[in-house]
Length: 331
Ligand SMILES: NC(=O)c1ccc[n+]([C@@H]2O[C@H](COP(=O)([O-])OP(=O)(O)OC[C@H]3O[C@@H](n4cnc5c(N)ncnc54)[C@H](O)[C@@H]3O)[C@@H](O)[C@H]2O)c1
Image: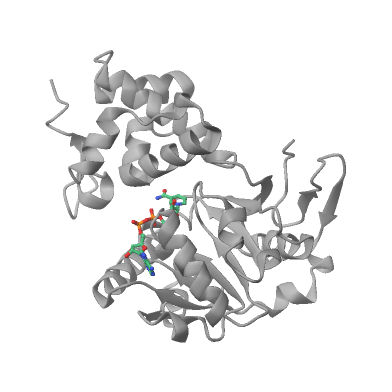
């Protein structure tokens, strides 16, 4: 039961039973909400750099963490280029851009990065072991009052929360790609997440000028439970030779009014991320209908992961917006 919301004015928060709803307007925002100032973002890849960009643009102090200085430097370059696009469009001034970039500090040391965190948003690689280890460490290192959020696309928030001593303060904050542009934040309540934490994060999403939708913690939540089977079916359709890459994407764009075809969308999400999500769905529901297509497995094993590696179903030459169907799939 998802209602239309007016993000600038109100959000609609549903209870677990979905029978009643509570409206929150900006003049009723809680004190906790206004006290969130320092945000730590873990992982500076596709999503992490977008999340850091968004928070910095909205005036928060951001600590951005990754494993290597090289990755962090690439992330800052990406953020700067993406902000340049906003400057060109007139949605951000040059001085706002400079101020936002100055609000981002980079770290390879997790302890330093979280020492003042009010909120940690984890956007590291979609891998259960990596996330469990990170949350064990975050629980030790972050202030006791900090909320720990994961941007995971599919991994159980309940399972992540269970490795911490603060499961009531662990929640899913699932941003969409590209983060500064896409309106939705799927807010996932783990089994032990408190109503207060959920309320804080719903309100924070509002402050970020996003539309927040609260969902329960089941594999793939809502977005990927519906999207990934469609992407997987598109890959099967290609694999079985029913149609080519651009034909499949054209059918879905022009026939279903999708802004982007499913194969291109998979390239943008990252084929490794798609494979991980499908594996979580297959295991979580115990249903073979989610089994990842063998072609997807092969492409990921070969390192053809989409935009981030320069080639997936399409080729993305560096420094240009032009892309063509990969020669592996052209007739
Ligand atoms: N790609 C998408 O469209 C999308 C959309 C929504 C959510 N997500 C989720 O966001 C998360 C990140 O996905 P992504 O696409 O940005 O992945 P990515 O591969 O682009 O980036 C992941 C980053 O995490 C870093 N990392 C790994 N382990 C780390 C650690 N222990 N500490 C610090 N950094 C670490 C990696 O070095 C890498 O830079 C995943 O959970 C994914 O499911 C992705």
